[in-house]
Length: 386
Image (cartoon, rainbow, N blue to C red; front, side, top):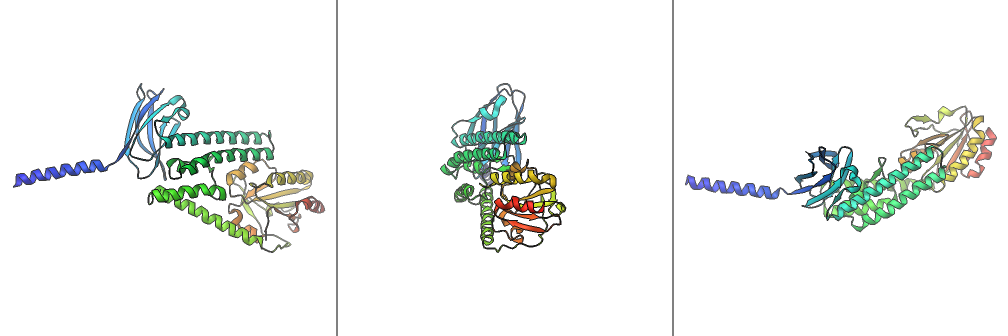
């Protein structure tokens, strides 16, 4: 009896081990990287909490490698890293990925056989690199004064519009795919290219979040995307409600105004009250608007005319896109600050502002002498107190 019990236990144990092995689903990535002899190749997980090292191998002369890892529950993102080069890829099923590439130019030579999702990710990475290069080139020209503000902003707008037009087709073509998720979170200089607080861009986040919640409900990445998208929607709705309230707010011009202390492009805070003794144009504006380029050109004419006599401009931006504002404001000759609360800012109600742009002319004692909504009259109002 004991003998039979022992044999039965052994059979059950073996079956349990086999079932356990079968239930441990894995994916495999293998391939060949040329020009890589003696270098270490790392496999890393691009998780929600950051980059996690999974495995590594020192490559021999033939550049062959193989990694095996636990399969994810939803499309997930990984990267192969060798020295300072990175190649991103997605795993969206129980599969074996076959990789080829040349370490001399990994970004452009990296490929995964028979993987449409990863071909799309490669396309996204390529387009993102082009956008980054063109934006950086425009920034350098603008900083060197080789192009003016209008040309600079037009270049940024053109680059981003072209990118979004192409990538939006990819996103909407398969919003539940790995490439769609990857696309909406692409960044240039640490700022999202698709702005979740923009009504037009939000549609991309909404399409992907809805699809992922349907097909991968309950997974950490799906939940993160859904929460991120819903919070962006709530924020935008609050901003729209605030803007609607301000449309009906009464216009009141007081003899003095509340102080403002906000950070400039370099992060240092400057107060409005620190400009007492000068004639100040307090200008409320939005850089990411159609009127902005001409608006700043007209302000610059007034500033150039009266600067030597003690005129200062204290310009407050209500842009939601900090990156765009910094690029546009970095070379302006006057004080530029930004309220991160955007159109939901308390300043708008404190100053009874219902339309932007609007300006206040403040004399050398710190008293308001004019409120200007029609900027064609601004030069005349400033001239009265200079």
